[in-house]
Length: 141
Image (cartoon, rainbow, N blue to C red):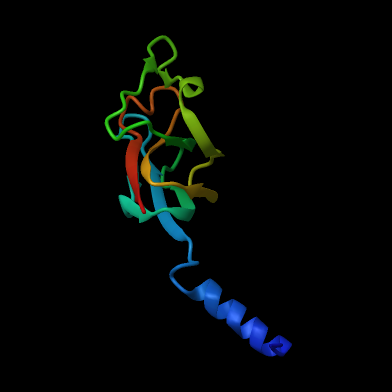
């Protein structure tokens, strides 16, 4: 059975727009600078497995931030900080990508395909993780 090109194009649009094919979007807002609380907040804490877009916004007025996406072995995995550097040892973690050098007021995105499990989003600029710039995302089937 052959379909005219218009019907195939319409079917493709319907399939891409259906929830089974739609990517999840997680909005991440980073904030904080000298003397103010450091924050990394997610607009949702749970998403379905599959394609996920992280829209990362730096809400600070003067401070650069970053967002590193890490797959955790378990929801309660302990994250080690290198005390002398005041940073997380990224070599010990499974990073799935990052938005680095995010200037104040800027927004960028990171696309990832996530399997079920727990993920950590963190800012690994010196002292930022220790100051609270991290959040856990749960991915379900």
